[in-house]
Length: 55
Image 1 (tube, rainbow, N blue to C red):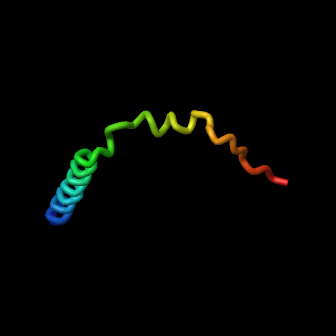
Image 2 (cartoon, rainbow, N blue to C red):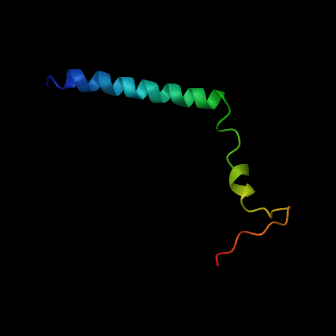
Image 3 (tube, rainbow, N blue to C red):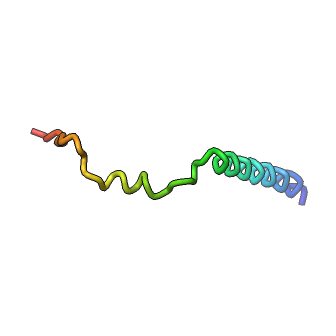
């Protein structure tokens, strides 16, 4: 039972740090636009560059 005196406060500290990290990221706008970066890979490259070929 004495392990509970170590595990419970340690778990609470870890959860507190995770909540602080989430709030910090949310206030800095990390979760504002989740669709555009994924869609950017699907657009054509306007410069006309071709990927290097092996050979």
